[in-house]
Length: 346
Image 1: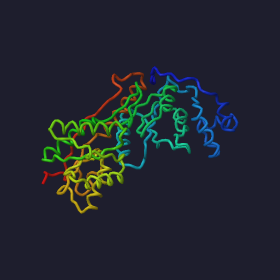
Image 2: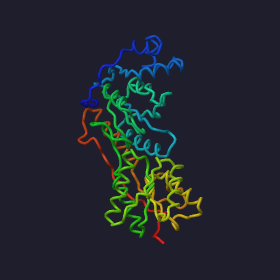
Image 3: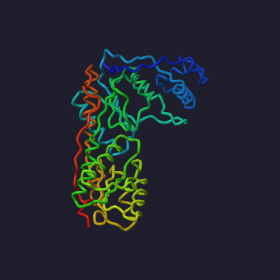
Image 4: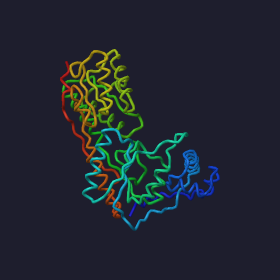
């Protein structure tokens, strides 16, 4: 069962060394490692920081001969509509597979900015047969920890390029960027800007590449000043849109690389007394419920979040049964959903 990657993890320090570093007894350090609750918060903090600082790795205890009826789903947040769509897809696929799902939020951060390790140890303590991750990112040490413990896992829409051999499921982001831009071009727009996410994320880079490819194909000159990054933050998207409006030749349309950022673009336009789509056409990306609730309703590129999550669960089940997927990267198609936020250029 489990993943059998070629990467090896060097033997780390013993628990006694960790205990000495944290200034606690070995039994106390053991309680923290095993996820026990009867440890004072300050003591737990010292031990977890020592574990991370020293690179301590528990000996594999995952029972590779047994597949339990439970998997873990670790989400970046439990409060967003994005997470709700992922959870819906996982629950439906898990029900079909006869599995139970334990849902939790991602790790907290230590004072040094490093993710806490206790949540990883609890994965093995629960006896789950595999893990689905929909997090902003996993650190190299966390990937190594999962590999060392031979726990099968799948990443849903990873932000960064996963290490070699790690299985992931995402959307056809490049094609989505092409589709969004081609839609605006078909309406006669040539001054098309893009408000993108972070510069280092896979999905944002792919969407910008699709946007640029569509412009090149149409013979439209690319304008560097029309490309703005907002880190997938609504407030930052509002500020980037205001900057675009202040250009000597502002855009007549904008492709926004997430629906949440599109809300910030709407705010900027309202602030300047401009209307959508009469003064500026807007296309989003995701097709979250918010896209239908805005006024006007947002034209957007739908990425199938629930289907991505369900596909990830089915791949995880195969891995739990000892079957290795032929490809480590699975991409599901995107499509344009036309609503009321785009119109022909004036």
